[in-house]
Length: 96
Image (cartoon, rainbow, N blue to C red; front, side, top):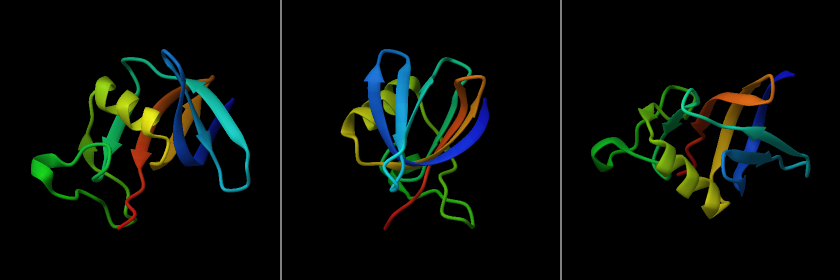
C-alpha cells in the first residue's frame, strides 16, 4: 500500500499512529526511526518561528518524541506519506 493521506494525526499505540480525514476515514500506519517528521508550529517550530513552505506545510525536522506528543494531542493536521504500511514522511499543515 502506497498512499498519501491528509487529516488529524492521532496516537494509536507505541510505534503506530493514525490520520483521520474530514470524511471520517481513519488510516493507521507504523512509524519508526526512518519516518521523517516536519513541523510548522504546533509539532515543532525552529527557534519558536513558524517554518513553512509555499503550500503551508512544515519544514522543521522533528524528533520521535515531538511526533508522539503531537499525535497524543489529537488536533494537529498533517499529510502522511505511507509505503507498505509504514510512514516515510509526516508533515504538519500549518493552520494560523
